[in-house]
Length: 411
Image (cartoon, rainbow, N blue to C red; front, side, top):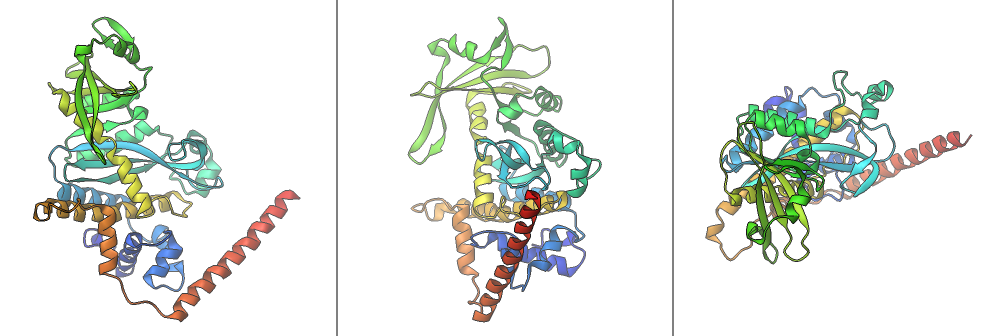
C-alpha cells in the first residue's frame, strides 16, 4: 500500500483504501461496499462509499503508480501491450455508459457497461495497467443522463479503438516499448493502425475475414489470399502450451505492399484439424521472423486471463456504482489488487527451480495462501448478527421502495 499512500493526503482515506484492497483480495462471495465494509470491521458501509465518490484522490495518479509497479515487477524484456474490452451485465439505464450493446461477456446484445483495458505482458507475467469506460453515442448526446451520472463535460464520444489509442499513448509516454496486439475490433481500425505506425510501434492485430490488403497482385480479401497459398507456404509452429501440451497450428506469412516506411505482413493461422482460419495485420519498422509474430499473436489471450482473474478473484464486475467517477475509482483499485497477486506470482515462479516438482504458482493460489496466512480470529456473534440485521433491514426498505415505484408506473 506504500505504492499509492502519497496519493491520499489524509490518513483516514489512506487506511480506508488499504482495508478496501484487502477486502478485494479476501475470499468473499461477492465484493461491493457492503461486503468490503463488513470485512474491514465497519458497522455500516458509510465509510467505504465516500472513498469512491467524495474523497479527494486522483484515480489516474493511482493508475500510473500501478503501471510503474507492474513494469518494475514484471520487467521490460519482450513486452507486449494487449488491448481488449469487457462488458459487465447491468440493469436499468442510469449507470454511466449502460445501455443495450454487444458484449463478449454474454456473446450477444445485452444491457451492459463496457470498459476498454490495456494489459502489460512479459515472460514473467501479465497485469492490467490502464482502463477507460466506453461511453456510447446515445449517452454522449444525452445531457440529462450525463449530468445524473456525473460524466465530465469535456468527455465526448470515442470509439473503442480511440480509447485504446489513448491508453497506448500513455504507456509510450511512460517509456514503455514493445509490441501491441488486439482483436478484430482494433485490428480493423485503420486510424489506430496508422497511429501505431506513425509512432513506429510494432503490432500484430487480428482482422476480419472480409478485411482487404494490398499485394503485388492488387487488393484482395484475406480469405481469398489464404485459399491461393501453396502447401509450401505453411509452417507448423506452437501457439503456446495448453493443459495437454503445445497447441500447434499451421502459419503462413504474406507481404503487404506499401509505399510507407516499415514492413507489413498478413499473418494467417490455420487449425490443423478443422482448417479454421484466423488473420492478423502485422507491422514492424524492420524485418521480423515468423516465430516472433506468432509469439505476439498468441499473447493476445493474456488479457482474457486478466479479465478472468480480476472478475473471479478481485470483483472487477461486482461493483454497484452509478457515476463516472465511482467507476474509475472502483476499477483502479481493482487493478491494484491483482497487480499485487501478479507480482508475488512472478517472484515465486522465478524461484521455481528450487521446487521443480511443483506446478507453477498461480494468482489464485497466491490469494488463497494470502488469506490463510493472514486470517484473523473469528469475530463475535453479536457482530455477525448486527450485520445480518443491518442487511435485512436495508433490503426490506429497498423492497418496499421498488414496489412503490413499480406501482406508480402501472398507474
